[in-house]
Length: 222
Image (cartoon, rainbow, N blue to C red; front, side, top):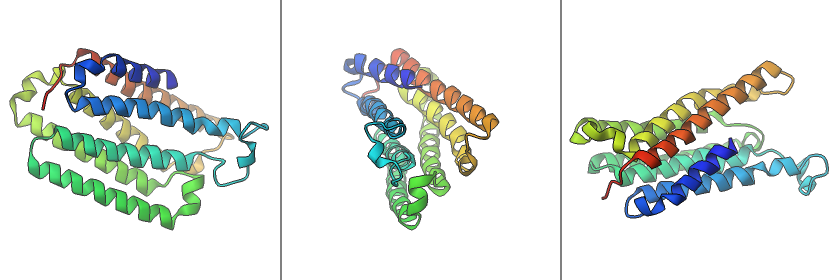
């Protein structure tokens, strides 16, 4: 999965000049950020079997749930809130989205503070749901605007369309899995295999969609 994430980031960087005068440049930055987060999130591999980070074994940092909750679920949703506030035209929708993002950040911090033990040992379903709601709101507002404009005639040339489809399906499929995470155990081989297959398919689909969008889309200037 790391391969397609790196491939998407590299594609974005190679096509940066194409999008450098548009809001899409922030999305390219986000793709690079994602690769960094995923690579650093693999620090857990160096904890077990006397790895260089073995001193973290037995501490609250031995698992990386906290890392992905903070830098993916919260940070990624916040980014998309920021990104869509850049590409939306309707000022009312932009204000609603900005308010939703600030509210999401506040509530997420409160939830984490009241669930610190769970924050370090597992996924917090309520944060996952709030994160998904931000994504759904971003995509809904975007599709609402293009349906009310002549952009609908050339939606296939818009990078934002590919981004919207990809993140909608990703969060729509991944969010329900957070409810099953407490039951995740390597003893249950069937669930481990199913979970791995779902992650492989949906993550690959998302980043391949990004890559296609970056290649075939036309820059949309502010």
